[in-house]
Length: 243
Image (cartoon, rainbow, N blue to C red; front, side, top):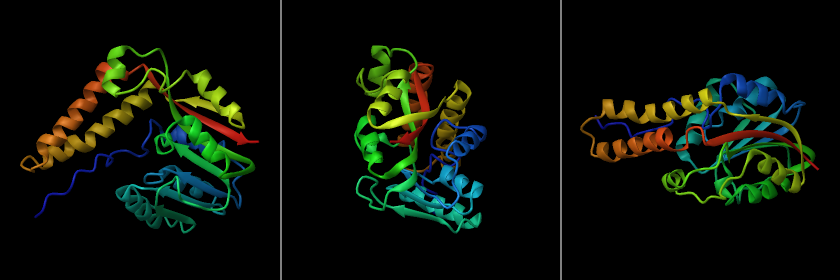
């Protein structure tokens, strides 16, 4: 039997530091959703989008991502849960075209457009006036050390403070409706589950030719997390109204 390829997201519910309770609050913050069109740009396996559709069955949901494994998993989950209004597409989010949405979601996807400012600008043209954007993005809880920047291969200004992130959104043509930040428990759960997908694979496939490479990836990630950005890198969820 051919060993299964590694899937490091196996044990993650969301590809972001987020609990079920956090997801519930974020979805509620997007109401009213009756009859609305919701688009998740960079949806991964679209778990948050599927929960939006479970909350409001009359909404239509589109998820777009270039990760084939994520889209395949999301489609299977949507079918299993009977969410017939979910449409997940394998595509580049920057070139995917559709009429402006009532609600857009972009969580941890700013790299697709290059940075947060460009993402906010791109989302602005993809949302109807008065529509909402749920933006999930990183910020510095406290100034990073040179060692952290080296470990993350990041520049000092790659992320700003939480206040700077909100200011950036306001300057891009939005009003802030709600703000939440991932707590340390959410971060630790997210990072632990990220590592667990690979650690379990290593246990199940000790003789696989990719074992050394996978072990190096997970060891480097855990070291960078625990000896680097833990407590420094934050993650914010901004619910914004497009003006």
